[in-house]
Length: 363
Image 1 (cartoon, helix red, strand yellow):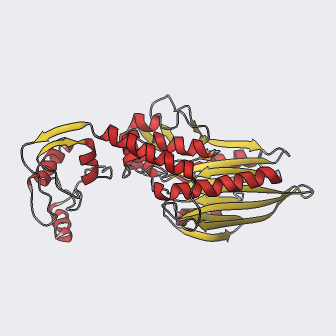
Image 2 (cartoon, rainbow, N blue to C red):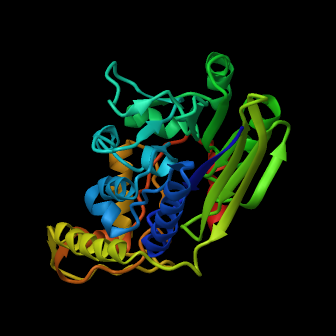
Image 3 (cartoon, rainbow, N blue to C red):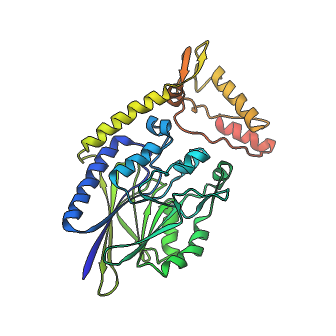
């Protein structure tokens, strides 16, 4: 007997909800088809679904993203660096509290003894016919950013060398949700042949058809929801092994949009606007932003950065702020509008000659 197993995936949506209703319509149709055909299917996300550039993600710190994944019926997700290092500690710690899907990320741990209830090392489950499937998740090891936020992130290779032999013993199929990037996925496929499928993200690469390396296939669906991915596996029960592995990424621009999802996104946008209308301060004068001149707001921000980091010198990119702030009340929405991306300040030690080179490079 031969049995088909279907996995559908998204990666690196980055809160580009303009494509989300098309993805939902596609997934709903696939779900209905497989229910009628009595075929097994699972839906997974590879991380960076959240991006605080969008008011919905900013206002609710990613929790509405999780709600949208719940609505579709996702089964498993891993986290990307946008979930991991653009949210404050407690926002990430509780991000998936209400998730109705499993969250697997083996190389991430909270630095205190208590771990989030949702965080799983891996997830092993059986199909109705007894096929044992293990799903692993790994995220990019941005240690210098994770540690100050209260998290430890282990190098992926160290994790795989230690943990993969354990799951190999009790798995028929091993799938890796990799928010590491294409070059790492390729190295992992070469060095860990027991992994059957690597569904990738992070580097925003697009593989319209599977890429075979060693015993693994690699797949990824680009970024921003322009594509949605499918993995099609064929298991032979007589031989007790996989005999076919294929993957595809399908463009969403020509797909219909799910009307209920569009309505929900409109509602969430209105909710977000209400939250972000909270006043922050009142300006006595207009604060000008000019990428080519020194202005009051940039100077004050740079001075505060120097004081906050206790550094000798502070620098900011000229394009950090996108627009002016007008005289009068300033809301959270105004701040988000002119600086829509979370910025992680960092301190580095430089010699004088190195500092001069940094300055020359920026001129």
